[in-house]
Length: 93
Image: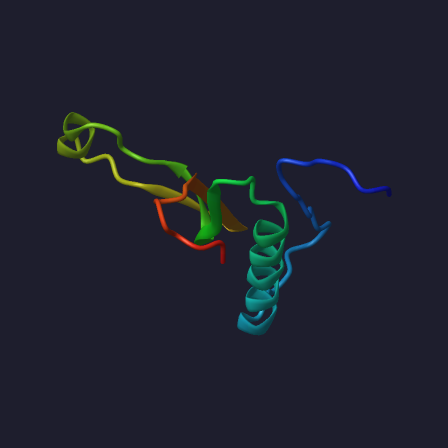
């Protein structure tokens, strides 16, 4: 595969697999490196959430009052990435 622009990376295994804490750290390290190498000028980008994939999150007080709670898919290991404009004087990491 040649170098190309992507918005997500997926791995789908034919069987359930165990991801050790060491492997999770390695995946997080890869995500940090991708952020560092690809962050647009004037922005900071970082892995901001690691763990089970959120499938539902209450968005209003009414939903919370109705007993709805955040739901997760524990069969998916997800690393979320966030970005924001740099603050004035902030150095690129």
